[in-house]
Image (cartoon, rainbow, N blue to C red; front, side, top):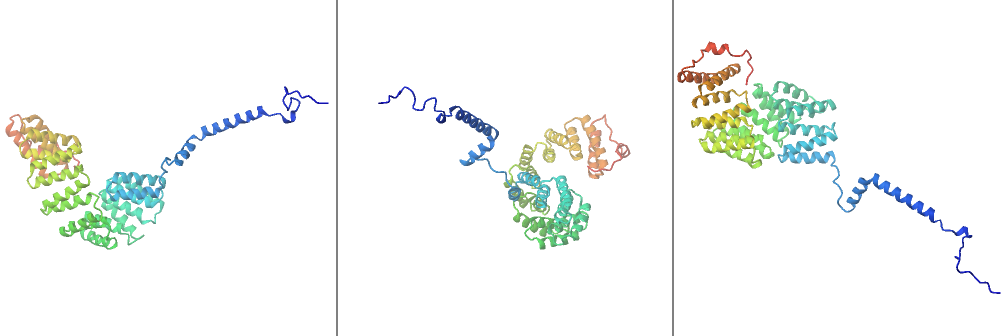
Length: 413
């Protein structure tokens, strides 16, 4: 007998439970998997993005290590980029605040930049971290010297020599500090020792030059400054000291060339532009001098010394309207400058304004007497006499009258 099969029913019919497809369970697992994956992606998006970018060579730059930052800072320092060097040293210091290597280099850069207070704070911290490390004491001594506190710097440096008598930076500091208190020969001796210990240290040569200049050895000082510049040609301060010695010895062209070297490092350096203004004034090239003074002001609009020098150039050619404007700006940015103030008063007088001139000169006389500057006092009195002769409403004060108005303080300008 032939069995007929009903092909309208599936081979595995509804009564065959053991082989039924678990469709609902698979869908559920798939949905849960996708949801978990999306949640993971949302919670770790930045890390996954960074990994993907790195895989194709577009990942973010890794944070530099402190040593890398310090190395970059030292390189920039030697190239003369003090601001960027200090910024990088600061980053390294923030990451390793107790590392005296970083503290010392950072502090030295700050001193060259003129931030003595921060350098002193770093020196104090270095000494707290390790009182036996000579570098913290050397940093403190140098910051004190540059902050015009040689009396405080000397005992710090001398005491630190007990920790390391051959640390050249301490001898270099003493070469600078002792002449500032009148002990010139001591400065020379410490300068010589600094050079012996560190013949390739630009600062040692620079400070030795300072000591030599104080005993009148200009040739020796010039030679040492030239050596300092050759060792580190990218820092401007030794150039200014060298040019000053050139001018003092009437080597005017050499001084001008030296200031031009500073401008080759930084064409907008206000101090170099002002010094060129002064140097060209010294050699009688007044128009060229004015141009450099104006350039200094253009690059530093609050530079009182540049306004004063420009005012003097106009004053000497009797262009009192222009000198008045320059001296007025000088007083604005340096209100304690008696030189700017009394020359402003004289400019007003020559412009015919006796009232303002008299008031300014009287105020200037009080300032000059407070600072004990006799030459300036004499010049102001001559101005007051000139006003009293030319303007009938004014009478020049007697010596006793002027002194009665002077303040009791003897603090200098």
